[in-house]
Length: 128
Image: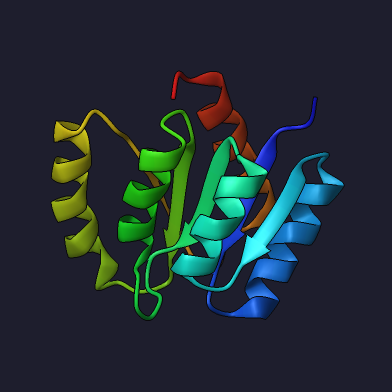
């Protein structure tokens, strides 16, 4: 059975590029360009992994991750951002996620395909 990954980025070209990389590596992929669309997709697609940009309009990646965890408690969370300002937000959210018993990986953008695949494999070998 293929591992399912939901990719969320408000820039469609980035979501599509990541999708191509992950499909070529053998994963089943769905994409969304906003949080609300991602939640609808997650309900139907049931991904094992959420790969989401942090900085998006309306619902950021951390808010989305929490909503996905409500629907799919075992879903692994891989978040990425190209903004240095995300570091403070990530520290704050890390404490919140830890208190709730969740963990996430924060990856720098742009995502190098080899680094992405390595982090993904490591995440899948750990318990959700």
